[in-house]
Length: 305
Image (cartoon, rainbow, N blue to C red; front, side, top):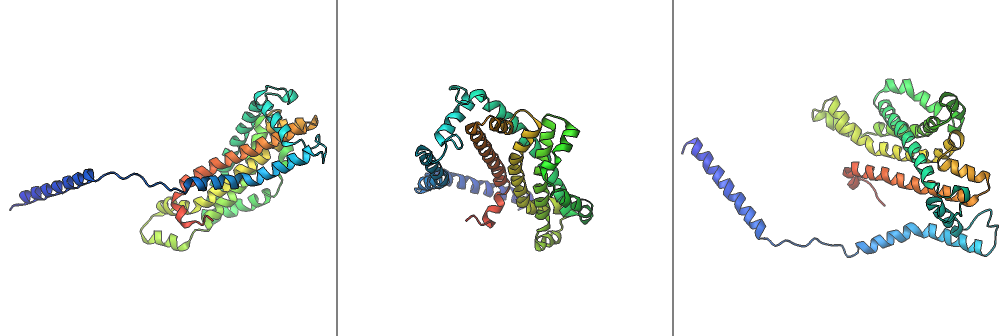
């Protein structure tokens, strides 16, 4: 049998085998996906655990206020705060007074400043941190300056930011980004420096060049620390939005909080604080979602409690 005939015979046998496997797969009855009977119970248990502590605090707080054990004007009860917050958002009852219906505008202003500051501070900090971790020369050039400046409170930068940028969004975004910058630098540097030497040598032994080592070994190994730094940066951005908006602008939840304090509207103050906390939590969940998508390969190696 010549070579062409032999190849045609092998191809025919292979095609017949594939068709046989396909027929067998079609003949097999499809099984229904296995459903975990305890999944719903676990979700309910987790939900109860999440709300147990804050729920208990709210109940005790409301009981103390209803019993008259302290002055309600100083610390309004949760029911009053809920009423004011509803009016802040929808502007239907007038319970929030001059602030009625202003929540959306203030919230959008704060969101813009937080994410703009987080974007430039987190991106620049991550890039510089990776460079410091990769190069001793870059470390000697920039790390001492970073370590000195990160100990200066952000509020100390307020006069200079107002001189350079004036009143408006620019100084607020600068202050927020400055606070987000330092956690990103430190964690990115740590992520590179904690790379396992055995892993690095294994990449070299497999013939990886410098670019492949960076893309396939160093950056993936540093990514958990990088995402931790970005998560901290997002939290600090929401902390600093109050400082930035009190001093530099006339809108946003920080401005709303401070203005309500001036008029002794503690219910509006607490509603603003609650809004900042919830928005900060939701922003953190966004970072966690991105982290989980990027680090799916790391789940089996990580302790999850």
